[in-house]
Length: 493
Ligand SMILES: [Zn+2]
Image (tube, rainbow, N blue to C red; front, side):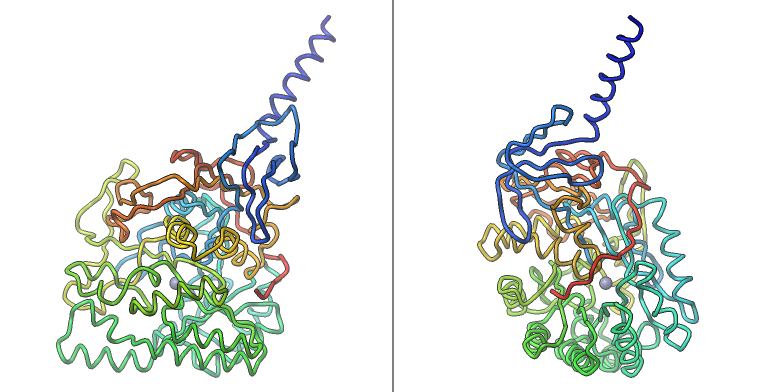
């Protein structure tokens, strides 16, 4: 009798346990960069087990996905959390920023290390990991910023990919702080080529910006619009072209972050036609806003670098997403309060962090950056897929699969295939939502898309099989996100 009871308890509990470890997503449209199929998807624990029709497992929880789209979790290639800038810090930390990303459908986020003058890359990596590890709510890694270069740093670069960091970033702007000389960038391109690394470039003309800023200030121009007027389009185009030429000569691999101009997009296309291994990212702000926004009374909110451009640039960048010229959409998320003197209520606390008001009397003191990470997928869906500019597969490629491939995470991330992490977004293509700072989750006091209606939102979001978001409720926690060793095969896309 006791024996029978033990067997019943054992069998009962094992089924009960499996119920939490096995899930069948039933009857949705499974979308990857390769195509669409109506099928079931079985996950076991943290991995995708199988995809097929009429999958059956009496131990699995069934998730009804009829009318829904099932896609791999978004991979956000470009974000800055708790980034010190001027006399403040970007207002989302790794927890609040990761949570906002997850609400928007992203389950992997790539941030950047910051190398202080004279600091080793290892020390900068240790700092970033220390800052993120206890608060991370989604999986994450860092691109390695190289802003102070010498022979010792070159030795360190040789070891980065072995440690799981397959990308580094350099700047042609921010003279005296972040910028490297062209000959240093050339050395980095060569060592990166030989050691399996992608070089990311922030392309603007540091010398010209410095001259124009000095002149604007001496002419007593202090308004936000001068941020854009001192960082002209041709500077981005020329700096980008210079680096593409260096990549052609060195046969390295380049990823241009936040392309804001039609001109640099043309350079990207022309380089790729010649066989140069160069890839490009743009961001929602460069698809939706223009320099005109900086003329508004709240123009400081729109200060980011590179600056917002023209309607023609917006149109051409959309075209670049449609026709395959651009490879990813990231956000460069780097939020600052519009008025950091006024506290907001956030997670039950009163929070105020100095922000855009720091530059009320001087455009050079306005912190550069915008809150956007939560809206990346909904905006691209609404204004890209719903308008016919992008196919659903292309959408998945831009927000998930390509970033995963480029940054060494594929097929663990960016894919729905047996063995991939069970990072799953159940996307409701018909759900309408009006964007507002009151309902979004980014830790800031304003939203640049306030009042914009989007159609298409995540209904449920899973990271490695665990539910993070369901019907706009949060089930994640700080510390659940893992530092990813990026050791997947690099793919030039
Ligand atoms: Zn950035």
